[in-house]
Length: 177
Length: 350
Image (cartoon, rainbow over all chains, first blue to last red; front, side, top):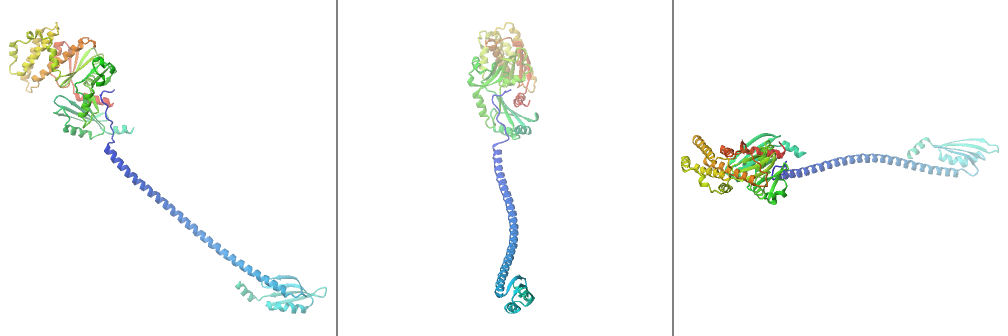
């Protein structure tokens, strides 16, 4: 029940001084915590960035390593290709030379190119044609030349000519390759 | 919720300011969880707010933000009417716009001048006020246990004021705030009304001489007594035997004299006696107004309850008992305690 003519003033612990002090401190703390939070965030993002950079470095190193490997592999491949190309061109040349070597009188039935030699099988009208027309140039090319003959039914001779490059030379050639 | 919690944590400081004609009493009650922790009371011999009072109050208000300052209204333009409807104020000769009012028990309301409230608030601006109580509320609070009874008169006696109210079965019938200083003329006027037989009824010279020994002031009192007796005759109360009354009054006067001469402390001086008589005069005239006014149901009043805040002499009781055949009960009260109770009730502590 109301007894008084007037109503009591609002009572609160929040006085104007209290408000001032509280607002001052709250602003200060807000700024402090904002700065602290900002620094925390920055620190966190820095650490994160650092990690990322480290991972990136590792990745890059790895990729550099793999690239180097690839480069080496490609270089090897290139060398291999070059060597194959050279070898092929040499072979091509050799074959061309070979066919140039073979006179018209002699017919080749089989030619086998070995790594260090050449085996020719064919038919020749006689041994002299073979000896002068084919074996002489073969001898100038190959270190060792072995020929064997056996007669054909029409009076011609089948021949098998085995020619080998000198093993030392072969080694030298391999080294050069 | 948080505010309530904080309120529980803090002390409540209740401060009462009671201003009388010469002094101001400030009572402080520091409360924690509805229990009084500390009380203090100080009297200042001034009626206005001084820096001393402010520092005394500030000393306690600094203890808690929950402090409440109550003031007992001592303005002249106050009273109580048996209605809560402000529209009916006109019936009792009051301008409703002029007064601030508080309704109680939905049957009566006390009022005071709005200007006085503003003036008090302004005067105590340095400390601020939370409550202003009417003495009629104080009175109804003191006698809340008695008010349900038959038609009775209740009077709060302050140093300068009398707050008189008449209740029947808990319902206010009539109330008046009487100012001792300013109503003196009025009281005398009532007393002197139609004093054609004044001379006949005045005490004999011999009797006057008998009494007029070494107490100069008493002579004046005796004159007043004479007036009182005139009033009785004036009111044509036939059953009052004037001679007996006179004798009784004289007897009391003698008793007083002996008391005065014997009492080393000399508490009851002529002034106080005069004041008691003045109070009686005021009560009498007020009662007369009640009986004569058609607006109030004027049955005969038998009982008078006096809440005595200042320590009135027994004379007032005697006057009322012997002059008006009333049964008087005087209860000594500490005004600040009652006001403190009211503050507690307002705050819901009690």
